[in-house]
Length: 377
Image (cartoon, rainbow, N blue to C red):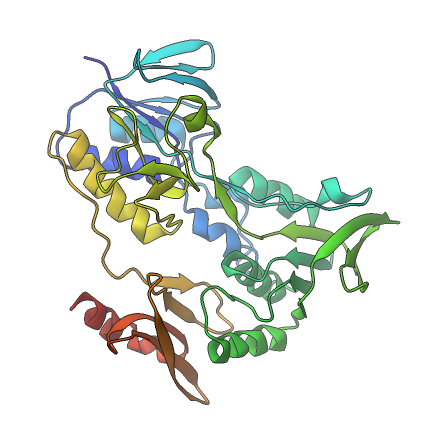
């Protein structure tokens, strides 16, 4: 019997494997990983400095332990170079693997910002444990970090680094932090809270050049201002890894295109997680991945199951100002704002005054459960 092959050992890949075993599936299982295949919580990468955690301390179970837990063969440090959907094979390093069903949990790569300057290649990105280890080593004993991007990851790193004692500058072309998630009053509170920690904001501009300046770096912005810094971290977003799927002839849009069963355009090939575009939606968050993995495990076991997404609030890990967001699903409507000195509650209502999403900051996060219940109803 040919195995189910899962490509990727992140949250998506490992959760599918766990769910398969949880429901009693006995299928042979092979997991292929381009890295060490340790199981860890990727969201922890953006708030580990303040607690002083090293990459080794963030790592959970290693590949050998995961192989035993999941009764799986795990190939670590192995690149998939080709997939033949007609022959139902894939090339993993020097080995050709046959599969009964194939799951692509390839993840996403940080978007590379085009930069000029002799130190543009020194701009760092943190997308996995190895990246985090390199970044931590690079700023050991340093004092000043400049972040490119004031989105979810940028704000989390800004809070974490500032709380750990670093001077932090944040650069973003938007007029406010978390511009895609928070309405203006809530974003203003986030801006003020992180500024109170010492974060310096540079909105309405972008980095265009990073140059070496003695032992430091000089970041030149599009408004001609300069930032002298010890390190630059890019956090401007992720792009799904789709090249392998495209080479195999799978349909690709922003991500690997799937239906609600997470099936791609090739028979018995599925995709989920940061690399997948499920009926037009790319959802690179923990809760969508968990729901998708549970549904896919049942499908792989012979019970075709659509993924259905409930209300899935996203917690922003900024202890300076707790925030929870449940983004509205791209419908017409308007934000209804209620605020006081302790927080902001923003409800997004559609044209029929039905609640379709929310954003809560500060003390208003206590209302999360009630609003999630309303969305579910």
